[in-house]
Length: 374
Image 1 (cartoon, rainbow, N blue to C red):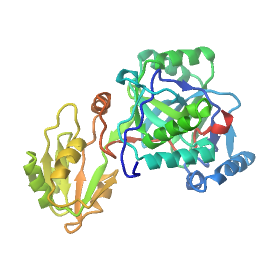
Image 2 (image 1 turned 90 degrees about the vertical axis):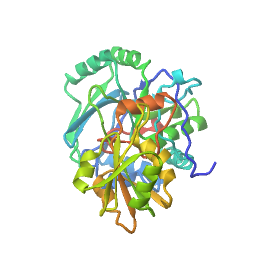
Image 3 (image 1 turned 30 degrees about the horizontal axis):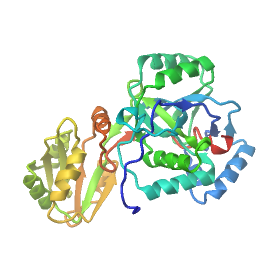
Image 4 (image 1 turned 135 degrees about the vertical axis):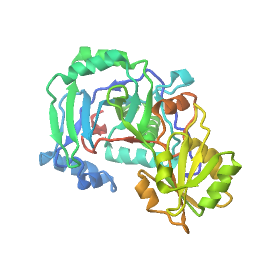
């Protein structure tokens, strides 16, 4: 299979299971530090030795007993809480109703293979993938009771994220959590390629610690992740090209001022600009689709020229900084709705690449899983 081909990652079958593990944790002064991020990059063989050196220096600890972890972090005024544990990836779903984990983007097989090799070489899951669901009320009540206890860890990291962590080890609480999660379905918010890498590791070494991968499950009913847009820059095309393509595809299009265009951005409108001319494209978005799908399925294929390249930016400012009348256009996107994304993936469909941006994400190094412990 070509490395450039985008494929659907396999579906994990239920029940949804998060199991306890012995978490490793960097010292607060190292969490979020650039040197820590570099430590988990190439060369992989040095990572274990470096972590052992940090452990001997008191800059990293590991719990003596397994636990599930309720991890709360606050960044930019947004507080997120999630359960962190080992996601069971050992079962495959043969029918749609058996799926426990729902990806919403395709993956590049070569990238997933590289990540699987990397984690195997490091013998680590450096960070949890992010999953979201709308959890049952009894589970929220149980975790609210956990929060009434004093957290075992309470600190601010180098990224100025505030963290509070409660290990959950009581057998009755763990059993109650397992029962509440069994029938749940979770959407991958961040980490599609790491999720696919977990599945590759399992296929290589079934019946071992590779049956599991580190994950954080966030309840959107409790502390919802913010779902933002990812904007596009289309090089080698122009506002005239987009206006013609939109009209040909039966979409409404109107040139206007920058202020009016930006104010019009919503789930049924997107904005196209080269920083000189501004246009609002009006979409007829069905209830089971999103604007980003119509952009890639209808508008971009109708362009008479280009684009030669599509680049992705998490802020409108970054996208606008990359375009001028002689280089291309920025397409400012509305943020998709979480429930619409869930509807699409439950219908066994995927969104285009870089369709969502769930924020904020936790800093690297808060909770790490060692594969050597399994």
